[in-house]
Length: 121
Image (cartoon, helix red, strand yellow):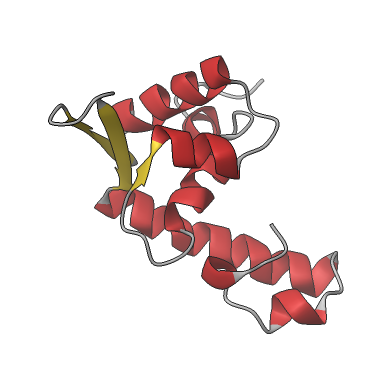
């Protein structure tokens, strides 16, 4: 039985939940430094509003993203962006892409495209 104090177990508990990786990845995509809740919802078809809110709260609590509230507008805007920790986690996602291309996915497009600007998503 795995010890719940294990670093891998603990890390999985943070980013192994459904949609967590994709939320982080979407905050990295394009040249935008930050995205509103509605932009994330639109970019992640299939995620429910309740689950997106839950994942955003968890990722914020774990220090991977920050949330800023813009109360100057109506409706109020929630704006999210990666923290330094979240930006470093993008390197892990890039490593996952490299591993996948080597062992599982044969895609010239993915091999030659920076994920930040990919149009396959």
